[in-house]
Length: 385
Image 1: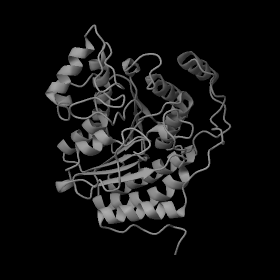
Image 2: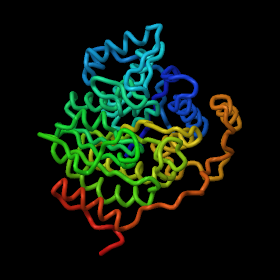
Image 3: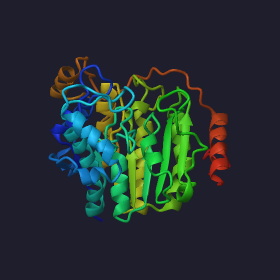
Image 4: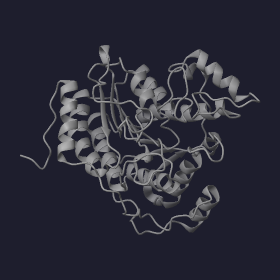
């Protein structure tokens, strides 16, 4: 059997998706992840890198976004006076049309690559899941993952979209709310405590999409003890029943413990479990067609190391770097130059965590809410008979 071969898409021009110093979203953290992955992959890993991506065309972008909104972004991209493309989180910047279009183009191209190669593709600059057809939102100008889902649908695919970003992927879910060809499963911090304030179990889709939208809101402080059991109970049965042709994951590093904008407490083990489960499902159901995008994340050392770990996992490095393995000296110097912060010494993550509010009763309550909303049953916890 031929070994799975990972493709990574990283164009240094992705850095031009830049809201400026002081803005929470920094593409430099994703660039540091790509550099760390490349510096620490074994020579025999067989990973292929794609390093040049042209921006998406207006016609490609219009498969999800309205012409009016595209016109606004294009005008604002060359305007002398800064404007906001939403209510205040997502400013236009010089060149934002081309920069946003390049990120979107990469994620759309990744769909074709999964089809051509029957293998995973990693696009760490992508995952801008908040943008809506007619507006920007939450630091996202164009919704690259929604455009990728649309590219899959237009190619005849049934698409399973999984989102573990701390923030609800509202742009994707509502963008395909009436589609029965998109299964959307979203783990996120409860919208009553975090932007964008959406994503409740009762939101299950409409029309042909009814029952294909699944929201799992978690309280601040929840971590792997919530994510892993819920993922194993809910995701495999839904995805197996749906039988997708393509699986897309928004990997959101802002769910990691210590993120500066969110309050969940996932660890590297939680993220590894999700990737391993999805790799297995993609091999079983859709010829290893798995597309993984970087998503959110606002603590640079978590984003850089976490996305690099994801790349190792996708490349088939089952164990990946050890906790205490030192980080390359040149990379640490680059981290300090890019962020102005002290670089981590190794791959380890501090173990200090806040007490979690999650328990067995909370799990049963959420699963019960899902069962009522979806009209179906999920497996009992593995520890129960």
